[in-house]
Length: 177
Image 1 (cartoon, rainbow, N blue to C red):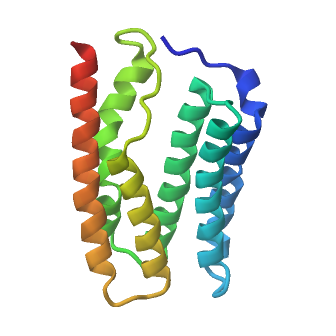
Image 2: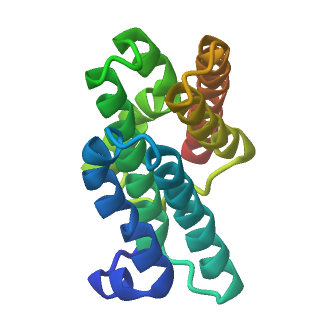
């Protein structure tokens, strides 16, 4: 059973994770500045790497931190993707493809949040999930750079997202046994 604590929110790795929230809130304004969107994405990606590294290095891993990191990741990427759809840099179909993993996770997250089997510890990320995150950021950079091969990045992210979501479902089924 996972133990969540408000006190854990002020631990250094969780403060680093929380830094993605103002980055997400500001992105709709940042995207209109030619020089800032890609460095903004890079800063958000750096916080995503740094929070986990810090938590592992200094033994500050907590259930609260794992859940917070996942929520901040999803909030940031969803805000960026929605902004790019609004700015007509991505189609709604591309947005759905980019969010395949996250859409596949929603039923698992709702089940965990409902306490159906009691609150469970957040599952650790896996290689497929990390690959999707990297591909999402690469696709967003390709989109902001107006690369002609952006569609290939979108499709690769979607394929990896389907695989990652499947691995989460399989892991959850095995844990339920």
